[in-house]
Image (cartoon, rainbow, N blue to C red; front, top):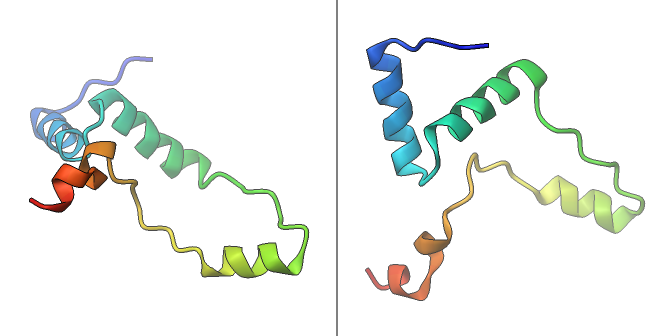
Length: 76
């Protein structure tokens, strides 16, 4: 399957990919996967500790790239 993007959508996708330090193709696939397949189901915790830990978890959207949490980036 080939998907043809409008110039506006392509520009937005490239900008978001640049901000997230990711490939535009990977970002597009992740968005499509999330939209049409939903979130990935995690296995159920086996004990109370696991249930409590999962209850504390918050989906923050994205992970920071390695360079953003390096010692050099902290002092910028």
